[in-house]
Image 1 (tube, rainbow, N blue to C red):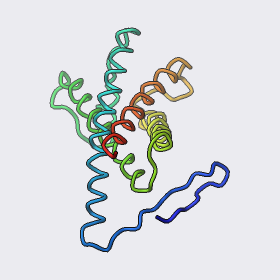
Image 2: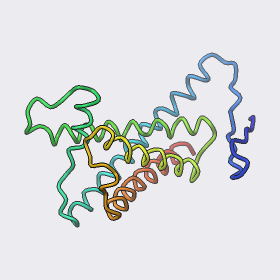
Image 3: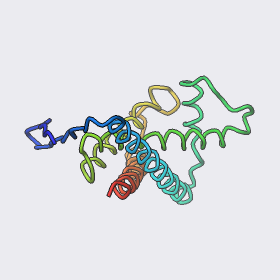
Image 4: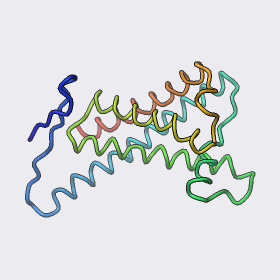
Length: 173
């Protein structure tokens, strides 16, 4: 394996695998990473869904329709009837969350695993969760958020990243 230092200050290294010249070897490695990533993303989505359900029972918050609103803007699709919007929102939530397992798989191809991969995964997911909804105008601007809202949202996304990371690493051992 070839080692590349990407940041001397933190001494993080990426190990690039030397691929065999056998036909299909690279494809097999990528396919495995994608498959494991999707499974890990689904597990992370299950974990964040449960985390949000518990939080909603405690805080009496209603389910968000942000996923449906975002899909309507980005993909120009919407449910057939307004009464179907909560179900559509859940479908988007699951598709979006499951797909976030793919970056976890890509990180493994670069040699990142365990806590460093989970930390990078969390940072990527949470920064996107903070920026995208307000930029699409499906959520209030961040300057209007209360500190408690940031904390709750960060906790949910941390639950996702940890669950996805644990599942990915378990599948890779």
